[in-house]
Length: 259
Image (cartoon, rainbow, N blue to C red; front, side, top):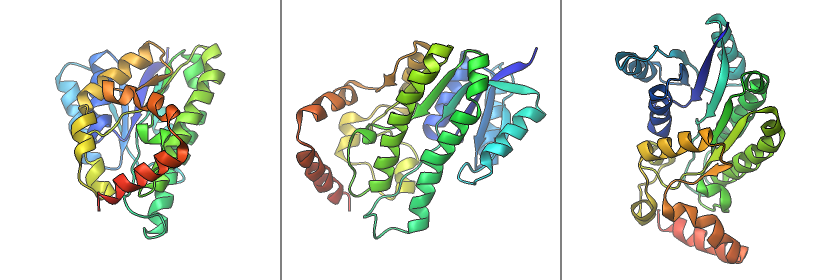
């Protein structure tokens, strides 16, 4: 009988690392992928030291066009197949879209959209066969237009829409499909994006540990969406009550204060 594993992308830091710990603590054999092999190996050793099976480590940059093939080949070489897929890898950059490096912003599309779509579709048959689950990491930013981080916000809107559509398609085939939409989480994301956490982080902040726990529980309960923290849960409701032009102006003004 072929062993089943849970693949987590972007597992070397932040929410991805905590998701790996939560899944491992709940008995999942893991396959971890990210760019930084040293961090993945350290995390794999930590999980093994706690008594779980040592995760499969797949150093890989999902921004590369052949990443899906490399990940699939690595899993095949280990003789395993997917039961759960967690598309956590993602990043953003702060600043006006026309002022930031175009290649860097297209990299956001490659990681947040193309790679997530590739892996979701590539392993869908395996998830169906093993009646597993798909967890895609979006953001509360996906509910908003995002001047100042235009490509990132738009990419997360795609993640929400795509995941909900896959839920309708894969749900009848026995697959749990959930989108995770956290608010500000204090991780390496902010430093890479180029801004420091502000008052929104203090008001809406939920730790990466708590986000991962909520995400795991939500996926196992087959929730459509997980919005960790009381403050974040009310955001979609409030947005439905406000004119889009007002939201756009408010986000633009808020982002300007980060400069």
